[in-house]
Image (cartoon, one colour):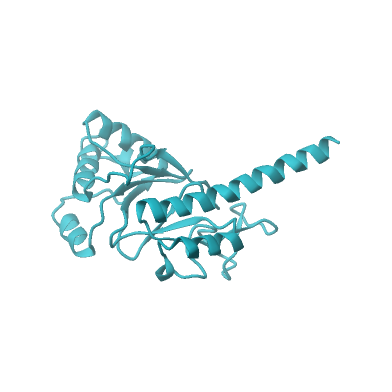
Amino acid sequence: MREILGRRRRLRFRRKERTARLDAAVAFAVEWNWPVLPGASLRATTRTATGAACSCPDPDCVVPGAHPYDPGLLAATTDERMIRWWWTRRPDAPVVLATGGRAPCAVSLPAVAGARALAALDTRGMRLGPVVATPTRWSILVAPYGLERLGELLYAKDGVPSSLRFHGEGGYLLLPPSVAGTGQVRWERAPLAGSARPWLPDVEAVVDALVEASTSTPGGGSRLAY
């Protein structure tokens, strides 16, 4: 009897999870005009050294469940009918944001460094928008920027922590409540409830603050670099 009840609870939880992903994808696209698409899912029956395997054809996929695959990134859309069609057929698929253009971009760094960086930016009074977190990396969402502008910004800096990654035009980012091979994707700083569209800081302000926090950290910035 306990086994039956446990199985029923797990099934209810999975149905709730699937509905949450569809609802989130629709909200991102329709309410905020963020183009999204379903990413590669995790295979429940196959295990790898990392504990999960990807539904894509690559048996050695290094980012299982954390990248676009069938459809490709260019298929990202804000069309509600298309989004409902996708997730009705693939309810376990993660929600992938196509960054750049009119959509948010992001600056990401390792999770431990991310926690320290956010604390440092809070101390400096830096206003931040939404922050997406996984067990391995945290991503600070920023206003859209072009590759040319990013190149000029980085060129002007004497030093930028090598652990920073930039998710700009032509890139992508997993959004909550997706689950990837590294674990649950969640909001570390959630968008304000009821907001028409989340406010996003300028990429230059975020990079400036991160570089300043890194260079002012004892040890030459190592606390933010790793």
